[in-house]
Image (cartoon, rainbow, N blue to C red; front, side, top):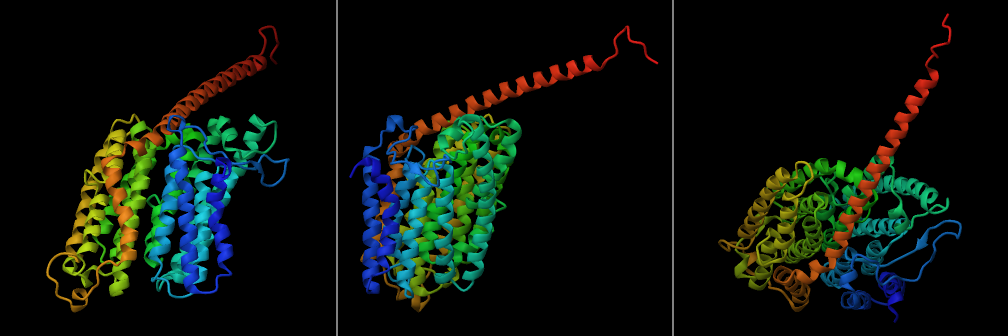
Length: 537
């Protein structure tokens, strides 16, 4: 297979697999076929890592075949590729695919075919988001993820699944529709400026378009609002705990591991380079919201009695660090934000998996119903301790690298108020250790008093296959982060250069407009002033 078609195969293999699965004769064949498709998609994505040119990570690579999406008269095209920002997120998506299939193996007992069909359709949407370099194509994939996730929560979720699914859709759709308005306006404005009057959603043409300062602010707000809901940034987070708690385990892993990253990815991919002046003007506001999310998420996590809800609120806190790193606008903070997206997907995904495994054994998520289970399930306890320490940011594990780079980069940032916000954000690191160690001590250690806990079975082979590669990545990313950081460094450097260049251009352009305006005012004043020889009645 040529590399030119590799990304297309990675994107659409799950969709083709979902269609073929409709004809599967039994539940057993559905499970194995879904695993084969998800595993095949992951294996197809591995050449991207080995064939990626790190030195040119800021450029578009593995560019696929292009063709018009609607008509030749509109510059809306099927344009895909990857760069240093999208490679790791794409690999994370394909890596989690077979893991989610396996974790649902015994958890999903009804309408198994429908579940796995939706799961594979969802994977097509997620991989498409990270490969699309036409903004309308990105929007199509972005919206495609909404439909299967709604049904995964609404059909296979918990008791309040309908409420959680509807809330998820309403929040996401509200932001998406605003983003669509901004895309349409931007497409027409850029088309007139840089594309001979032809409407365009080509990412690179929109990037070449210097959006006027007066237009930047409201376009930035529309894009940022959509992505802030997806992350979610405080105070747009209220849909997340409900969605996580009600979703099946596989849905929670996908939601935490990939879907939330679509929001932070959108902030980096579109908001910063398209609207740099507006982004810089809003750094203090967004930084404050990010830090509130960090502290609030950690405090509310400590107050939970439901283990799954604790992990859900921890996502609000952890992704607050990512947003802080993005808007600190330094090389270190943006790199830290990128690697922290991957770290969160692995560590928090593993936490949801372990909570799901415990739920399958005891059919309860209340931490008070456990206690001392380390004696019954020592292998599961090992993975839980490792994952909790990684999520808490212990040096030597993956969580430390991203948080450290974000805090260092944000503290050295020239953005207003950022050093003070960074100091406040460090309390989130301490609070994370508090609520995670509290959960460990309450659920896994102490006296083993309940007979049901004493009789719990340890991990089986399938569960070991699920958790072992995630644990390996936590250690690998903690001890050897350099190969992963090198992938994003050129792209982050280019992004900062683009922001500075476009801001400088906007300031010059704004100064020219101001001078023209002043000259026009003086000219009008002179022409309207009476001549000394003119007689005034």
